[in-house]
Image (cartoon, rainbow, N blue to C red; front, side):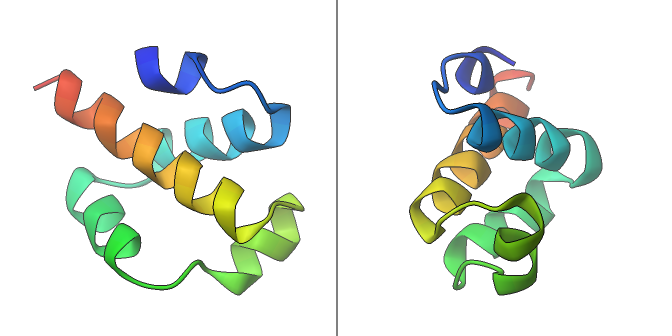
Length: 66
């Protein structure tokens, strides 16, 4: 989880790890093309920018694993 480990914000990092473990690359790719999920943002207490950063990091780490 190289990209996730580089995230500085604790909440963003925690959400990114959750996304990496729970969602497939296809699901993350679809999420990245849409609007940030308001329910997840509220649950994780993160902003839209943090949500997008976490999704991108989780997706990048999936791709780096090949």
